[in-house]
Length: 56
Image (cartoon, rainbow, N blue to C red):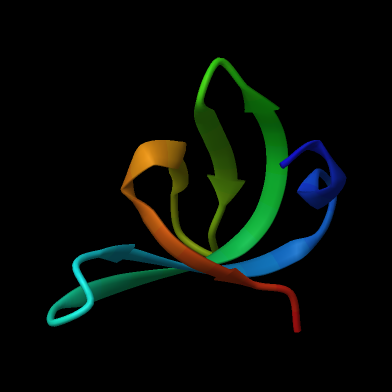
């Protein structure tokens, strides 16, 4: 996960049937959390909740 720091990513959360997508820049990765700056907010996402991460 540390290699994602500083990159723009698309993170899918939830289950395979229903997922929520967060797009933004990864500011920090620590203690099982991703800190992502989106256009409007700062998001803290538990790594356990992530289904997939895309780096466009």
